Structure formats: C-alpha cells, structure tokens
Length: 223
Image 1 (spheres, one colour):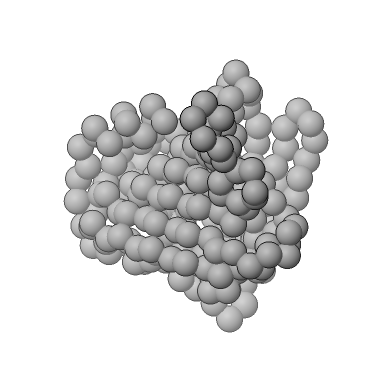
Image 2 (tube, one colour):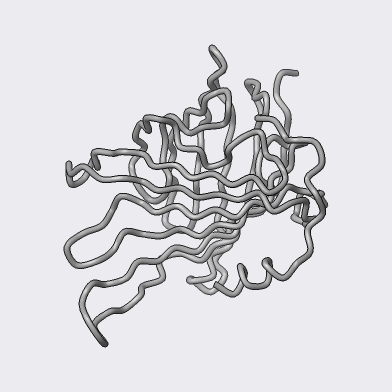
C-alpha cells in the first residue's frame, strides 16, 4: 500500500469547474502500459477502443495482452460513465444494475459517493453485493508515457462479491488520475487483497494485485 501513502501526502489543487462525463465517439482509442509489481515489474499492454455509440451509451472493446496470451472483452458504459456491463476485475463480463459508478460524474471538488449493487454472482449463483466508495481529492499533476497532465485525482475502494467460506471478499484500493482531454484515466494504481478467515495466526492477508496502468497514447475518433 506504499503508493497510496505517498499519494496521500501530496498537495492537490482544487478541481475548478465540475468535470462532466466524456462524450465518447466511435474510434476513440487508448493504449496503456500495465506494470505488475507482484511479478517483478512485468509489463503488459491494454488497448481500448469505442466500437459503437447509441442512445447515449457506448460499447468499448478491450484487449489485454501479456506473456501468457491475449484476452478480449466488451465494456458497455452509459451516458454518465457508469459501467452497465463488463468486468470489474479478473472475472467474466456481466451486467450491473444499476450501472457501477466507478467515476461519479460530474467530478467536483471534495465529492464523495457510495454505491451498493445487489448481484447474483455468475460463479456461485449466490446473492451478494458489490460495494463502491469514491472521493474526488482535487487536481494532481502526473506524467505518463503519453505526456504530462493536470489530472483530477480520485481515490476509490471497490469490494467485490467473491467472498467464500474460507476467505473475505476482495478489496480493491485504487488511485485514479482522470484527464478530461483524453476522456479517460491517464494513470491508475491498484492494490487488491483478501483475508483468509480464521483466528490468530491463521488470519492471513493475501495480496493479489499491485499494478500501475499508464496511458501510452490516445487517438480521438470521429475523424
């Protein structure tokens, strides 16, 4: 969790005017570099492209590739940036009702939000909940391979619906730098963990992810 401790100590400037949800168009394309700190800095690639827009909603094709191969899926987002269908983490894409508010637009200084999504988990077929908490901290400059950005910094916690008899649900802690000019985050730092159930020394916290995602390029569509 070192990355989050460092971020918390950085001064942020006010957001300024509220940042509205992006207007996505067919052809918008983002390429990201993903650094895996649990695998000695192994680097992989994530490509995202808007392939359809209708009625205020957009379909985004995501293509993730690393040394083990490629994985492709489709995310669907509504006009307010909510994830109505897709993958929150390492799982099969599925619908979310209501849409998951990973970014609760408009992004305004000091804004916080909480969301509870009732689910029927596709693997266990048990009723559960996904819990989301987010806070807009302010403007925070960051530099990534695509350039330097005066981004809006958001801190987010997502608790997944994957609890089992022997372990707690997965908790994702995420630092997000969102840049309106590219309609997306330019950097995300994510840490994921769960705790094995038990008592005393049997209670072990397992870290399952420590990654940094950085924008390499953005190509606007509609041209």
